[in-house]
Length: 194
Image (tube, rainbow, N blue to C red; front, side, top):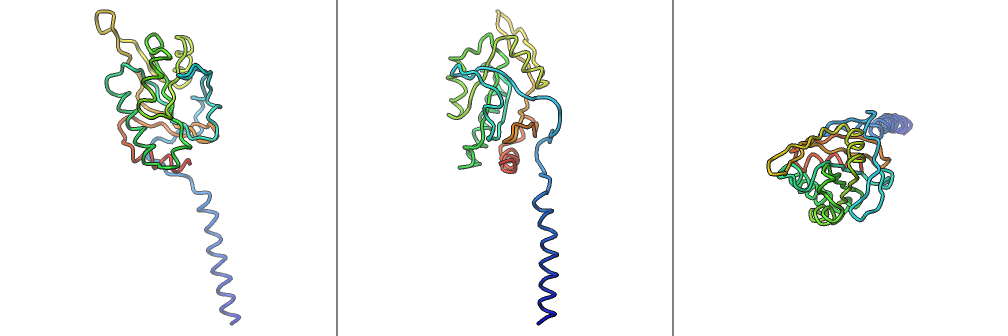
């Protein structure tokens, strides 16, 4: 009996020694892990209701932030549809995820237009905007490429970086998501951050 008890104590010690390794395991993400990089620290913009917003307003939630514009013909709407699919895949835990759409076209993307466009993809999505100076400052902070490209008769498109940024519940930058990766890999990554 004493030998059995000794063997049981040893087995529990071995199992217990491995438990701390599981708890401290570094996440393995599908998207690009940018944890610790010193940029994309925040923004100061207005939401599509006209309320001033900063990244700190969303502390406690996992935030997915995307730059685009409402007249974007391809990348922006497909990204927004993909984000809505991600929330659907997350089920009830999606309440702890906030998707933010920052316009790079403040000249045309008014508060009213953003209020109609952004929640059309999902009612929880929030559109953010600022004047030209605030938009440029935010794009620079996030290292987002943006360029107005004339397309004739006074019209233009906006070339821009097409990835999304993911922040953890503490407001720390964690991931850069390349466009076109699909909803599944992002949903898996967000589950780890939730």
